[in-house]
Length: 208
Image (tube, rainbow, N blue to C red; front, side):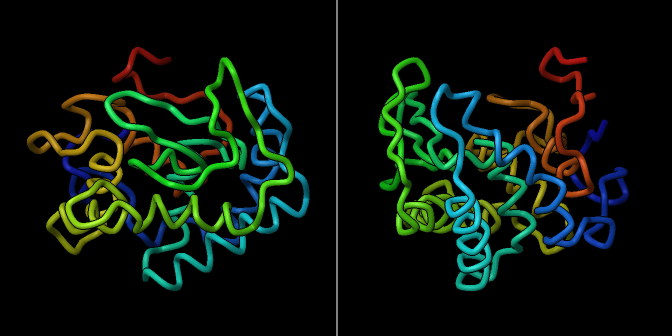
């Protein structure tokens, strides 16, 4: 279990220990194909899943954000279900990335009352990923802004950005502190290095 500030000195994984994008995609593909079951809506078609992969790579290229990081966040948020419902707290968080006030979705309903759109158009899939990566505008919580807010250039910027994406901020020098999902940054580190569907070993949120 990873604790501390996200640096390799604190035991967090270096980028060289991350899987390649193709390895990560292949490892996560079985989960992606059945991911909508959790939301009681139709699972991705093969075409939707193919569009998901190409959209991740397209947004990664246009924003210069590592495609592996985008995939890890997406898997954490929706497991790749193109019909992931909208969650609403203070703001609406729709779609694949559960993005901050995103404007794209193929399920405007909730998990309890899904309104899945099938087929999910490629434009919406691309839009959902773009919303999460670079769609929140100046000062908003998307991956581009979160990486900037991390305020560093070593690999810890990704783990700090993950925590910011989840909760809006980093508390002190421990990515497990603060609000929202305390295991979030550690989960992302694990996803980047090969964790897919095994039991999470992080105990910060009362897990195993």
